[in-house]
Length: 225
Image (tube, rainbow, N blue to C red; front, top):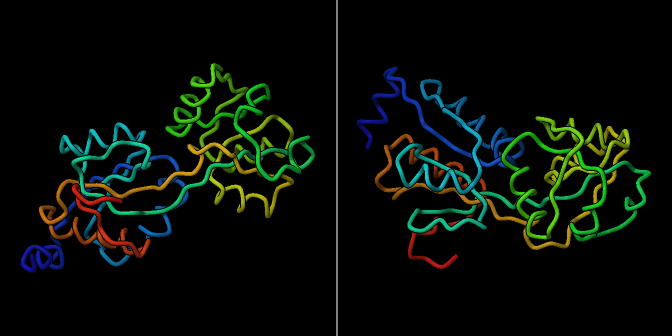
């Protein structure tokens, strides 16, 4: 292992393939991945956004070394470790009739105008709307949570975004956010890979760095969460 790490120190460049779901990509990874990349100037990360279900298949099939997925997805027989808690909220104008509510059910929003997200998160939201017998037809799809919050502030409709993004945007925009009572709106994000001990040393080092950010133990495939 030390010999392989020494190769990188001598200037051998390497690329690690990391697939992440929307929330991890936009809200959690930049702060946790940035310091590690700065400390490893000869290592590149090929980062791609994918739905959690696709990420699990990609890791199992060897198309990526590390993934970050929702715990709503079956990850067996991959190795997993807690990464972050992602709580989805409904964001809306501060003058919206529901803005003063503390919690609402997603079903209460199904008749309202929606601002969609042009990414994997929208599929997650659409799936739960379909289970409630409703087909969402967002007025517009945007690529950033900040964009969704900006349009929500203007009264275009509601959006579903991570609470961490809503809190940040509320500092500068006239928006409110309301937590959803639905169980699916609160997700544990998990790091996953094939057997960690079989990863390339530098890839294993990144996995363990990302896991340490949660201060949680690695869960082996046969370990109860």
